Length: 120
Image (cartoon, rainbow, N blue to C red; front, side):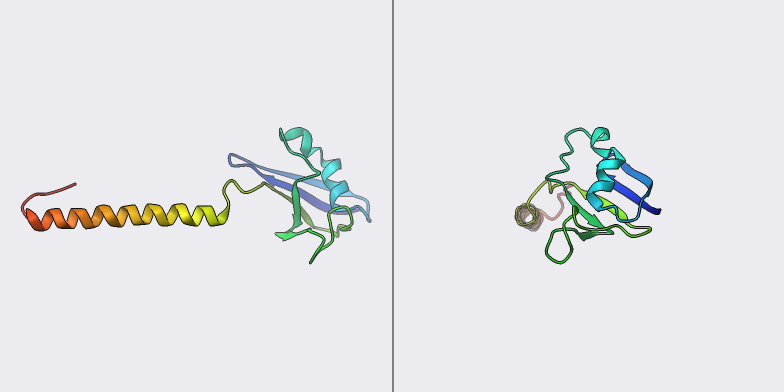
C-alpha cells in the first residue's frame, strides 16, 4: 500500500483527500477513487489538467495521468483553467498603469497652475 493525496484548490477553499492505495495505481485511478468529481460541481476529469507536486502530467516531459504510476507520498494535483489569458492580463495591467500615469501627469500640471490648491 502507498500513501498519496489528491488535491484541488478552489478560490474559497482547498480540498485535500489522503488515500491509501495499492501499488501500481495510476494518477487518474487515484483521482477517480477519491470521489473528488462528486464534491466539485462542474469538474470534468477528462479535461482537467493534473500534476504531481506542480509537475504537469502532460504526456511530454511527464507521462499522462492514465500512465503515471504513483509512488508513496505523491500528491496528485488537479488544476483549474486560467480565468484570463496571461497575455491579456499583461495588456490590462499596462492599460491601467498608463491611465494612472496620465492622471498623475494631469494632477502635476494642475498643481503647477495653482500650487496652493490641495488635491486628494
